[in-house]
Length: 135
Image 1 (cartoon, rainbow, N blue to C red):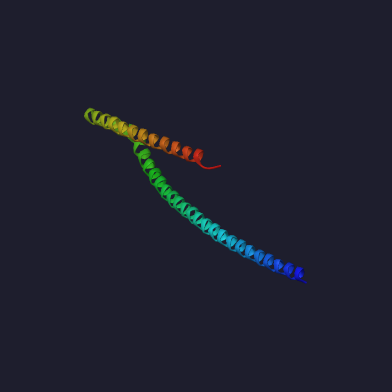
Image 2 (tube, rainbow, N blue to C red; image 1 turned 30 degrees about the vertical axis):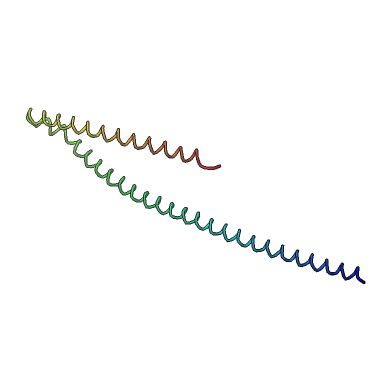
């Protein structure tokens, strides 16, 4: 009888230990799930914010492109009439026009060079980010 009582007591202790381990496992699983959900929520918000920012930038760039296209069309129209105006202009007016056109061409060249430098820097940054992103 003593053997049975000892066996039963050991079985009860083992059951209690198993129950405690199951409870600890469930708590750890719950904490890990909560942590994973919090991480996912942070990453999802970051992604959503990045998408909204990209959309806002795209809209702004589209508006800027429209304004640039309108300005370019206006310049094209002005340039289309230049030969007729030059033919009827005095020598001093033609000389002034040529000087102004040279200055304008120099300013445009400087702006295009600046823009090319910015684009190269952006491309380099984008490539660095792509190459350094964890795989």
